[in-house]
Image (tube, rainbow, N blue to C red):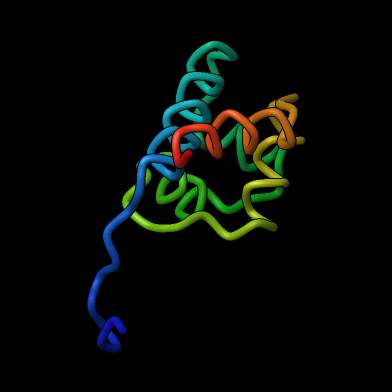
Amino acid sequence: MTKPGSRKAIGPATSYIAGELRAQRARLGWSFAELEERSGVPTSTADRALRGKSGIPVEILIQLCVGMGMDVGKLLQEASELSE
């Protein structure tokens, strides 16, 4: 069990998802302000998610994927294959 206030290690699935989100934002050429406008996810939250330093809440992942035109199901499937 993790102590309150301590950081959990992030696994390969989260790292993969964060990398794909970063890559899509780069392909689109969007600033974080534009990502916030199109996804509804605050810039600070999106920045944390795209850095992959902590878990990404499902609601945030869905908003980011929809906002950037990504298939969240496909992304999760690809990430789950890293855990097999």
